[in-house]
Amino acid sequence: MKAALPLIALLAVAACQAPPAAPEPPAAPAAPSAPEPPQPPGGPPAPPAAPTILSGLSRADFENRLENGAGCTLSRGEADLVVAVIGDAVAKVDGRVVDLTGAPLVEISDMARGGRFEGGGAVIQVDAAPDLGDRVAEPEGALRRPVRATVTSGGRREVFTADWTCGS
Image (cartoon, rainbow, N blue to C red; front, side, top):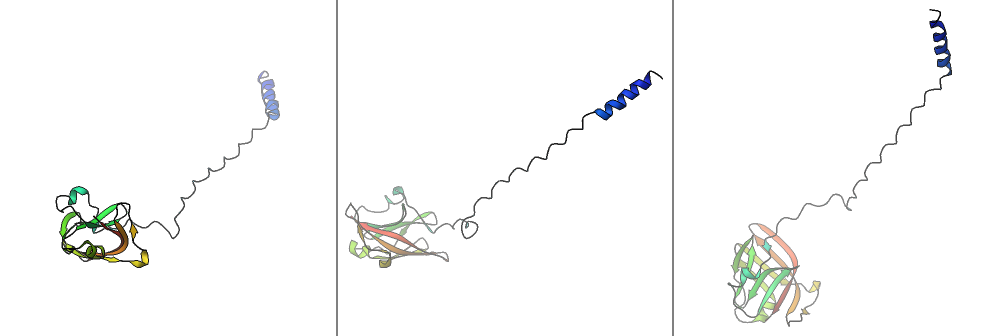
C-alpha cells in the first residue's frame, strides 16, 4: 500500500497540472441556402395556352387537294393555317385537313381582300386590319398584308392577327 501511495500522489499532481481540455471548435456556420429562383413579373408563369383550332399545314396536306395557281395563304409565324386558290381552300381544323368553301371563283383580287371560309365545322373570317400596317410586297411578287382572323368551331372562338399573303 505504501507503494501505491506515491503513485496516487503522482496521479493527483499530474491531474492538477494537466493542460485544460481544448475548447470545442465553434459550430460551423450554416451553409447558405440556395437563392430563390427569380419569379417573372406579375407572379408565377401562366399555364400553357390551350390548343388552337387551326394548326399548320404541310405541303403534303394540300398538294393533292388544290390546283396550282394564284392564291392566298393565312399564316401565323412560320405556320400556314389556310391555303386558298381560286375556287378552293384547305385548312387543318382540330388536327384534320378539311376542304373549305368560300374561296372566290374568279379573281385573285377578290380573295386578296380576305373573306369567310367554312368547312370541318369551322368558320374562318379573314379581315384586313389597316391598324396593323399596310401591304408589303414580297420578293416573289406576292403581297402580304396583316389581317385579323376570327375562327369559331364547336363553341370555341379565337381571334388573332396573322398575315394574308396573295400572289401567283
